[in-house]
Structure formats: structure tokens, C-alpha cells
Image (tube, rainbow, N blue to C red):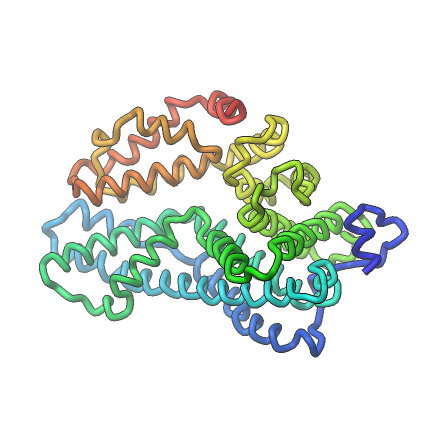
Length: 413
């Protein structure tokens, strides 16, 4: 216990042997029951990630079907391409539900009396490792999802086709697999920029609200302690040298960022407040000391937190200069993905688009939100305008906003 307290107070020179073993921690008898339950869920995580990484989408088939609405053969080809993908998306969504329940079980174990959260993390390292593995999976999943606009395009096409057939009193076999209620829940899930992280945040807040006799500090202290331990291990050469691979280093960084985001959602004043128990500047500094390509996604995740725009400019500029180029690339990527969306750009008021961009702290989230509005206009208007219109609208934003001007605008908010 003393070793961990010294770590948290940064008096680590005399206690070099404390280490939260993310590589080799094994469950004690007291941990084993919960550990087995969580392990049964996590054993599917790698196949989920591999399946998501291999997800290519049905963009060409959808585009051909939209271009040729009277060609029955092309309509069937697009539908046959989309249906198996929707089944895969359902599997991802159902895994998020299992992960949500697993997180709540872990939180119950790591915050319950008589031990403090800090004592739990030190005594029950196997459960702490599983908590870390959940967060690691979550950030990897969301990074892959954010880079793959085909997911939302495919699902939007599926829902539009189902709605059209329902109007014509047609029932398709896939509705037995993904009925209307399931499709609605999946739609809400995939509308999030980071759906798995949103799921975990909701699960954590639900855990706090359902356990009213448990002080909220037990949960927030568990999260802030985990963040502090990860940060100290990353910035201390003696601890870093005990990592047997670079992947463990990345694992530790993802866990630190994931816990910060959970803390920001659960704590009444968030992670960036001066009274927060998380050293945000220190955590960001640790990330920026790594290779830029390896941490851009993590900095982007932090830049999307709701209360970052209220912080001093020096804290915001710690994040934005590294993360902004990725957002610019993401904008161009999404602009091409919008070629598959049949939409009339003229129906989007220019002032509305600019207002969205001015209110967003993350460049990527701005474009993601813009894409959602494009699709919502399609759902309302069912326009058959040119396929280039959505692409033109987003590319136009690239010319409206100079990169440096947009960066300055964000920092002045």
C-alpha cells in the first residue's frame, strides 16, 4: 500500500519496485470468479477488432444502385452486399452490451468497501488488468470506426431500404435478424463518433446512479488512481524498462486516456478542473513525448471532451497542434465518402454549416457532425440530386476555412 501511495505522490525514488503488471498479473482466489466472467467477454475482443479492421463496406455497390434507381439487378446487388455487413455491425453492437455489463461488474469489485479504490487496485491487479484491457479494446475499436465512414454509409442505406420496403408492405428476411427496434438501437450506437467509449461512459454513470449508497468518490478515485499509476509508469524509466514490448507502452497510454475520458464523464466538474485529481498537463506531456504518429488518435480523443474549450489556451494548444493534421486528413477522407450519399447540397443553409464548425472543438467531429446532417437531409427530402453534391459541400469547407485560421478560432473560444 505504501508503495502505491508514494507513486501517487511522485515520491518514487525510494520505492522503485511497485509496478502495476499489465503483462503478467494473475487472479487470486478472491478475484477468480469475476475474472473468469470478464475473461469470457474479452476473449472475443481480438476477433471483433480483426473483423472491424477488415470491414471494407459496400460503397461501390451502393453508389451504382443510387445512380441507377430503376436497375433492379444493381439494387439487388447492393442489397446483397449490405445485408451481411449489417449482420457484422449487429455483432459489434451486441459485444458493446456485453462489455457494458462486464465494466459494471468490475467497477463493483474495484470500488466496494471495506477497501479504498487505491487498495483494490494494488491488491487485485488481475482485475485492474482486465479493466485496462476493456479500455484498450475500446479505444482501438473507436479509432478504427472513426476512420471507416463506410460503416455509417452502409447502415444508412440499409435503413432507407428497409423503410422504403416497409412502406410498400414488403418484409425482408434480414428483418428477422435485425428488426426495427434493433436497427434503432444500432443507429444510435453508430451515430456516435466513439461508440464504445460512449457505451462505457454511460455504463459508468449508470453504475454511479444505481449505487446511491456508494460515494461517487469511490468511483472517481478508482479512475484517477488508475490514471496516475499509468502516467507514472510511462514517465519513469525504471518502470518503462520493465515493459517487454512497445505494444505494452501503447497499451498503457490507451488505458490512461480511456480512464481520463471516463473520469471526465462521471466527475461532477470533469477532468480539466483545477480540483481534479488528474494531472492533465502531465498526462498530455507524457503523450506528446511519444512518436506523433502513435498518439494522434489519443490526443484527438482528449480534444473531443466537452469542457476542453473552457480551459486556458496553453492547455488546448498542448493538444491541437499535433491532432489537427489528422483532422484535416479525416475531412478529406469523409468528403470522398459522402459521394455515396444522395443529397442536395443547396438545401443546407450555409450559415448553419458555419455555425456547426464554429462550435466544434474537434475538426474531425465537426465533419462527422456535418455528415450526419447531410444524411438527415436525405432522410427528410429523399433528394435525387447529383452524387457529387455532398462531396462538393465538404470540400468547399476546406477552401472557406484556412487551416491556420481554423486552428486559431478553436484556441480563442
